[in-house]
Amino acid sequence: MSNLPRHVAIIMDGNGRWAQQRGKARVRGHERGAEVIRDILTFAAHHDEIEYMTLYAFSTENWKRPKAEVDFLMRLLSRYLKKELHVYLENDVSFNAIGDLSRFSPSVQALIHDTERQTAHCKGLKHYFALNYGAQDEIIRALNSLRENQTDITKDSLSAALDAPEAVDLMIRTGGDHRLSNFLLWQAAYAELFFTRTLWPDFTAHELQSIINQFKSVERRFGGL
Ligand code: FPP
Image 1: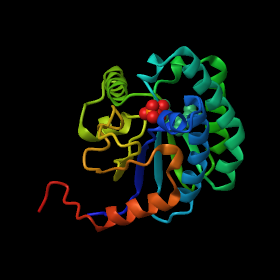
Image 2: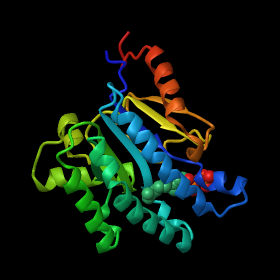
Image 3: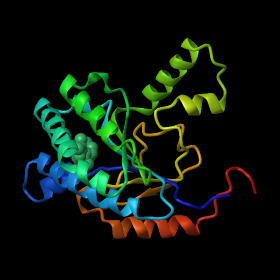
Image 4: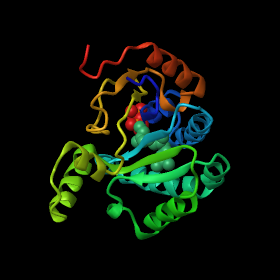
């Protein structure tokens, strides 16, 4: 059984607290958080064992935040996609959005699809960015698409119909909480879960490597002996 961190998924939590601890507006934490994404993706792109990295950027529940914060996150997303395109291209990373994109404005949707198209040829790391994502919503959309196509529902057919079909090996949550918050519930069936108190804006490639080292020392039995 594989103890390789082929698919690493991260719940990036703690941006607001990071900013508040510094007497800054919460959105400054999101801004810093976006910069950390670049470091972590670049690290993953050069890590021989990581093939997929999924980051939880915006959940189906995040629309409930104050409008000013949601608006800021939308502007930050647009800025991020424009500014970081070269990082994807230089590191051979493909950008793949997962989630229900229909709720985003047409201009944000166009930018997301444009980034996907421009990085589609990149064959190094496959990066999934979860946007208006919820695992329950993903599973329901997958089931409906199988029903529409009159496909038998099996473990394999359902997996293949998900936005991100690959099983997660290592799931990390920053920010100190011990919850999965509706992230990759199907794919994480046998994932090792790691929770760190580090707030996302303080998370580093060094800490990720240390978590990977711990992950590799765990014996994964997948229900066997
Ligand atoms: C959680 O922090 C973080 C998010 C809402 C999503 C992650 C967003 C980023 C890393 C910024 C980059 C995002 C885009 C869209 C480019 P929180 O606000 O819940 O922190 P708290 O728990 O301390 O309040």
